Image (cartoon, rainbow, N blue to C red; front, side):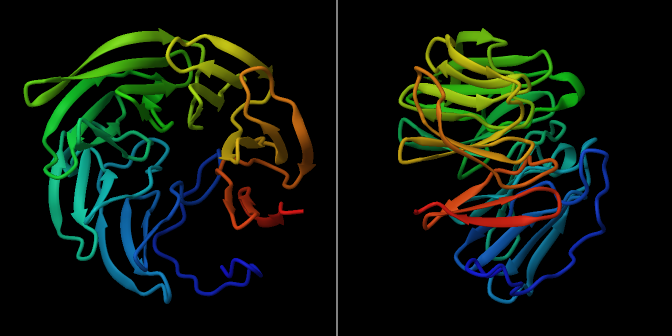
Length: 311
């Protein structure tokens, strides 16, 4: 779409429509890198196209679609395009981002719904895979597995993005599983972990948390909350703001509720006090908004809207 007008620049079908009681269509957000767009379809078609024209550059077909379809986006890491593929396709699978040629696979765990997450620890790049029943870490260049732990959630729904900061790895899932903060250490040529805290203080089914000034902000299955990163202590919560999405900009949180209301407030462990609110969409809004050039782009299941926030 043209970012200024919303006019369609190009469009192309790339797999049959996925239909589901929670909303039809592709689950993953496209990834853009060096003039290419990467998308993983709900049915497992991994496609790379030219960003200017939409013409195909390469494609792959993954074979192990989970219950609610593939949902993780493509991670671009250097020259690699990395996806959470699952089972014989590799729990994590890396392809050359320009050619699509396979580079490495790591693990054979069933696929989860989270996007592979990159981080740097002791000068080394790693990728976290949040799979259907486990979490694992692979070396980014080689795919060599260096750490794993079981992580069982109802219906294998591990979907929220992991977070890494200053040697600590944070994981969260919904239903009754909850969250954990793990301290990572080197152990020979692998990684080891110790649990700093584990709690149901955050139960994120699929919306990821934001870490800001040592605090986690998230709209989980029960409420909008602020939780201390290192201790798991809850600072505040706003009940009934469930499954919302958050964007952080200039020290402010931009919350889009699942019902389509935009709320903007300072990110603070003291409270969440909206400076302004606006009903910008209706229906179910589960996709994270995008802020660019002072404009907010948001969507529900069938509409895309753009609002100028610079005034």
